Each structure stands twice: as structure tokens, then as C-alpha cells.
Image (tube, rainbow, N blue to C red; front, top):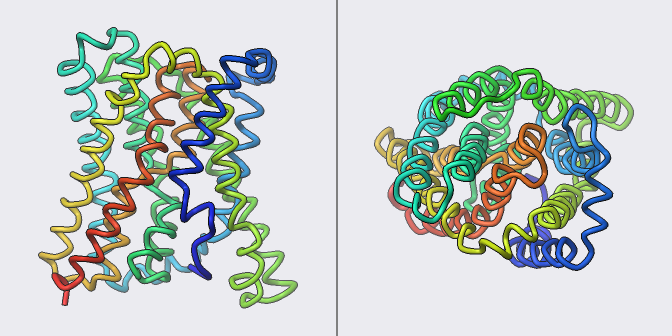
Amino acid sequence: MQGGISIFQKYLSVWVIICISAGIAVGHWLPIIPQTLAQFEYAHVSLPISILIWIMIYPMMLKVDFQSVKDVGKHPRGLLITCVTNWLIKPFTMFAIAWFFLMVVFRKWISPDLANEYLAGAVLLGAAPCTAMVFVWSYLCRGNASYTLVQVAVNDLIILIAFVPIVSLLLGIGGISIPWETLFLSVALFVLIPLVAALLTRSFVVHRRGADYYNKQFVSKFDTLTTIGLLLTLVLLFSFQGDTILNNPFHIVLIAVPLILQTFFIFFLAYGWAQKWHLPHDIAAPADMIGASNFFELAVAVAVSLFGLQSGAALATVVGVLVEVPVMLTLVRMANKTRHWFD
């Protein structure tokens, strides 16, 4: 990752809280704004949210160089840990942990219908490993930037194939019916299209100005765009969720519990596995960060497309954004303090 951490990234938790508060205030005192924006949709996909999601996702896709996939043979164990954790373990443990807490432990505080929606949001988070903020986590724990790029590129390719069937399977087990066409449309809109656009941009700029200019100057121009898109999305989402949150603030805490437990569980599972296999710390730490964190931009977009802006599923994915930043910063500190385990 080039450069340092921007003020948005450094104080992201603070910005998230400010934007959530602003969104709730808009929804409560200026309801005409979310009501008007809600009318702009196509095939159950919110156009304002779609624009903001593209603003978030396109800059992160600019950093993905799929030519790096040819380097997968370097440290194959690190890539194996990432893929197994992200696709054979994480989605299913997220479902199990979220189902246990939302349907059993918290059942006297959450209605069955609402618990189902919260569960759906958790499943969407669990089936989408991080592809953006992981560059920040990797930078903070002094990870190998080149290998982090390889891991992200491989995960993006797998998302195109595995996200839809995994989500469909787990939501089906939970008794939640979803339209496959909407799910495929969401993946096309929020992964495939920005990915193709980014690849075309990379090809054009590299051809005109060279790879060195692209990697060191062009991509850095978009560093804050993803965060700004995220913050504006939070304002808009919470403007739709304002009354729900004010009436049920306790639900935010209840949703956060399984999400936080899942994050710590996945991190220590992968981290311990990497330590047992004697991986270098600069490979092990980013590999674990990818599984512990989530591609919440995709999760939010799909939740809105499938269940609506005011749904419990959309709220659960946004809570995922709220808890991820402080939890991941805690895990970064843990990774840095245990660096000697890998010496």
C-alpha cells in the first residue's frame, strides 16, 4: 500500500459515529429527504445507494492487479489459510453464531421476523471477505503489501463465483427466501461492473503514463473517495433507519454481539493456524485480517437490494461497519504485540 493513513482512515470510528448520528437526525427531523430518495429505484435496487456504493468500490478495485495472481505460488500456505478460512469456515460460523444469539439467546428481545432479517444481514457480512480496508489493516501491521494484493485479487475472483450460492444456501437454511436474480444482479452491479471499469482504467492509464505513475500517483488520488462514499452511505442508510434505531437502540448492541464474537474467533483461528505453520508475520497477519474483516460495501448493497433500505438486514450490515473499525484496530494491536511468535 502506498503512502500513509489519511485522517479519514485514522479516525474512521469517530467519523462513523458522527455520520450515524447525522443520519438518524435527518430521518427523524427531515423525513422528506429519505422518503424522496426512496422513490429512485430500479428492480428493487436503490439508485442513490448504488451510486454511493460505486464511489466506495471503484477506488478499491483500482488497487487490484490481477496480474499478481501469477504469484500465488509464493507462500501458498498463506493463501490456503485465507481461502479455507474465508470460504469454507467463516460463512458457516457466522451463520451459526448469529443464529444462536439472535434466535435463542436474544429471542425475548427480538421478534422472530426481525431476527430473521438481522440473521440475513449477518450472513451477507460473513460471505464477503474484506477487499478494501484490508489494505489499511495490512499497512498498520506492517504486512507484505504485494502478497496482500495477491490475496485480495484471489478473493475477488472467488466472490464472483461463490458469493451467490453460499448466501442462497445459508439464507435457505435460515428459512429466508430470496430472489436469485436480484442476488446475481447485486454481484454484477457491485463487484463485476466496478471491477471491469477499474481494469479498463488501469490498462488505459498504464498504457498512457506507465505502471509507476499508476501505482504511485494515480491510485492515490482516490484514497479518500472510498471513505467519503462510505460516510455518505451511512448518513443515507441511517436516515432510513432513524426511527427504528430510536425505538430499539438496544438492538444495535444485540446485533453487535455475534458480529464481534465472530470477528475475534476467525482472527484467532487463522492466526493460530498461521503460527503453527511457521508463516512469516508479514504474510500471516494480512491473511488473518482478510478473514476477520468484511467486504461491508457489498454486504450493505446486497442487503438493500434484497430486503430494502429500511430492513433489519440493511441495519445489521451497517452495524457491521460500526463495530468493524474499532475491533479490527484492536486485532491490529494484538498482531503487532505478538510479532515475536513468528520470529
